[in-house]
Image (cartoon, rainbow, N blue to C red; front, side, top):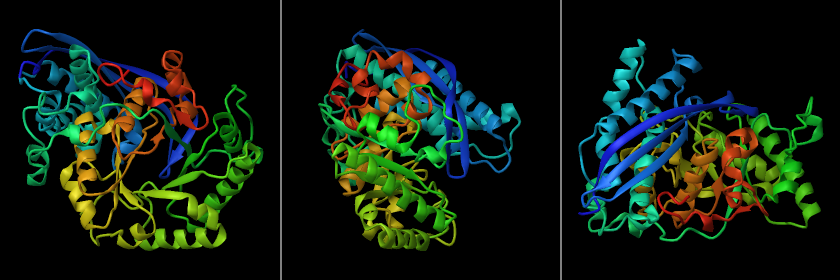
Length: 448
């Protein structure tokens, strides 16, 4: 097709920011972030040119749980992988739609990762999840450049008039004759509620604060609810201490109910994230039952549960989620690295999928299509994405039809990285009545 692109030039650079306050999840505490930015220049067969940008936090604390390497080592490997992916794209000779180019390049991510480990002298495998995160800004830049080249939002460039092969090439015969335009919206949703994170260290009340930051931002859960009119809260739980997890949820409901009563609001929602720390499905079921006993309203407000047990779906004994999924949707997150993992998760009883821009635009679009095809619950998750990476994540959520809310916690933990974008996109970085005005994410490229 005349709109097929070749890659002319790809460059990368990094930024580093300290967190405003520490974030705890899955037994890990994160205090800073390194962001990889990528710029891509492309040219179509008929001579049109475009420049696009991609950005993503190198979230090694989440993407790489290492038995032998420390945090600095896994971070350095992911940054090196991201830079190597950008350099690989710079020399890539294929021509096609960005979906096709990214899938083709993805077949080389493992060998790129192996070369990083050899160069650094590290002996353990480079996790596939960490590979996807490191490569994601390059993918974003290519999709953005394609849209900028054509002066059109890239979510309107996913049909057969732009893509050379149907989805069966990536997702099997069930998708014969179908393209991504069947599973994406040409226009973004006008507004979407924001999921605010209640991390493991986050104060619920003044009594939880040993010393205030006094930086002008809210510090307790009640203050955040009042300031942003929040209606959706994501609760980080321990997964290894049932009494703590029950008490934490009940306490959050009490604080939230008080804050919402002051606003005259009686409807709000929760999601629960155990970050893989639960030992079994029974833990989840007991937590659900006992939260329901102590705070029925809290259980009523629970929309879904994020991957409660370890990310290795092949580990024995196999842990299923059939019983828990009958109570609330249980979504696969850390384990979701390709279509094979999605199929395996369904065999284990998972009933939903968490999409993330940090796993790559091509991966997110394909897994979003598969989830809709098979009637799975869908959500879009954050990786404490600030600035351009959050705009990308929000645009993805706004263009997937069955996604109802956006998770975004960069404003809580790393507002400094949002500063260059907040005045340009106040509709996305300033929360109003718990929602973002996602209608603005309709520009060329990724939407911003």
